Each structure stands twice: as structure tokens, then as C-alpha cells.
Image 1 (tube, rainbow, N blue to C red):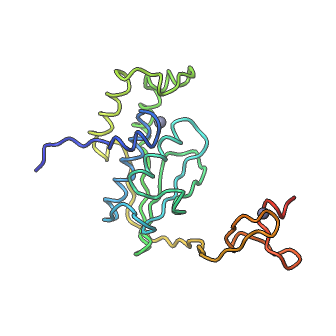
Image 2: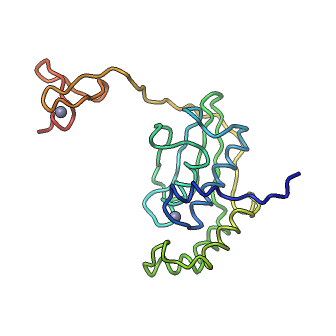
Length: 200
Ligand SMILES: [Zn+2]
Ligand SMILES: [Zn+2]
């Protein structure tokens, strides 16, 4: 057995833009969900992510971590925000239609929200301006903590997800000449127009 301690990869912090504890919590939530489903990080569209968070501090950061560990990104069209204002995710294996919900344990979340880090954030100190001596122990704590202390993990359940269909079909917009994919263009007076041009 390896004695190497788990660490959030540096690239995930680079992607996120700063060091904070919420992104690593999301990263581990994604890992926990994948482990329960017995799946690997999505390289294409193998998984689908419903993130229950919405506009709140410490929520956007959480979602970046989940996207980093699961590979469920907005770019690939396999991530969706439900805006429930909760740090919880539902991860779906699109091959088997099996899903799991992972949510932050209230006791753990409450502790995090009462941390010195969050107190400073409330005083409008940006994460990048908070001393590493304060942030790094919080991150290490998240890296080493038992997933069952951090999260409530549901049983595996069935969930069907309809992915919206992509297309390779395209035309030049008859007004602005830019290339627009057919499933997002309109036909006005027999001519293809992009959505912004159709609204002018
Ligand atoms: Zn952050
Ligand atoms: Zn146009």
C-alpha cells in the first residue's frame, strides 16, 4: 500500500485561479461519487453532473472542483446547475443510468462556514489575499479527511438523462456571415440567420 498522501493536483488550483478549501471539497465530492458508481473521470460524455449549488459564496468554488475531478464540464455539455443553493451533486453514469447523490454533511459544512477563512471572506478579503499559512492547513485537512465525515453519500439509484443532440451541420448566417450550427440558427424568409441577427 502506498503511504503517499492524497493531494489535489496543482492544475486544478491553476484552473480554479486561487487556493481555497471549497474547490478541494468539490474535487473530493466528485471523487467520492465516482468511487461509489465505480466509474472513471469522463473523457468524453460518459458521465453527467447535476450540481445543486447556485449563486452563493463558497458554491462556485465547489463546482469548479467537481468539474475538475469528474471531467463533467460545461464545455462538454455534461454539467448542469440546479441553483438550489446547496453544495451537493448528483453524478450519473450515462452508460448504465445509475446515479449517486453526494452532499456536504451539515456538521462539516457548518464548521467550514465558521472558519477563519470564511470570516475573512465575509470581510471582503479575496481568497488570493488570504495568507497561505491560513489556507494551506484547511486544504490539507480536506485532502486527508474521511469522505464519510465530509459527505453524506446516497445509495445508487436509477436516473435517465436526455443529452441535447449536437450537430456538425452548419451554414453561414445570411446577415453577419459567421458560421452558425444549424440547430441554433433560424430560417427567416427562406434564409439562415443566427440568433443575435434574428433579434436585430
Ligand atoms: Zn475558490
Ligand atoms: Zn448573424
